[in-house]
Length: 255
Image (cartoon, rainbow, N blue to C red; front, side, top):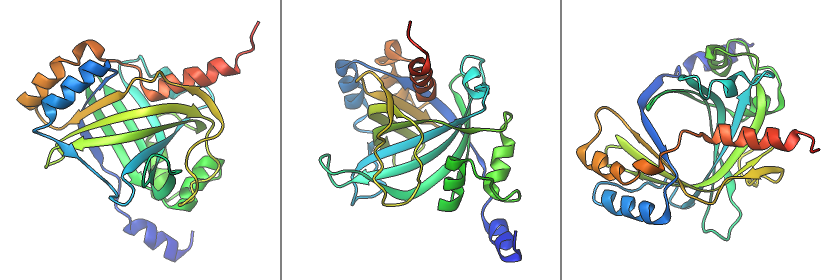
């Protein structure tokens, strides 16, 4: 690594762990409508790019050859390592394009408590992760990969979905509504402005909206009341787990 590159890497902020709580639901249409009505006075829609109001997320999950991350899903301490990219479109009929914003994330869940370390990536770093090329050993991305207790890893699966985000003014409570969830083979490019929707699909999730509720500190009373109506629709299955099952089932020979 050159002296200039080393200085640039040292100038990048070190990733810090975010700690909050998270619950996941797959509600019926009526339960979802009642929940949205209950939180209407406390949250509003959050747009990351007003010029691209239809937002999408492309998440590529990494795992070891032995699928050790997948094996943590029911261990009480689930771990996920992922490359997260974002895309958007001006309207639903328009093909979404990647925005160029991308992160490497190491996420751990223990019950409803969540810890996430998130690092902004450059395009060359993202391409290296997707193609299995080595990262600079002293780079921030390589250091985050070494924080994962399970190594080495490679891309296994990509989840793609349209996401609507609702949040309080302080963003202490954030609610995401994910629709059109599909699973695909990992992409071969992270380039900004590239057509983002996957083509090598391996499966589709049920059409129900996935609701994820994340909040910091104590649960606000208004949120606690609103969540009562969703309690019977709570699910522990993550997108990673659903997608890997679709991928592995599709790879098994039929008799």
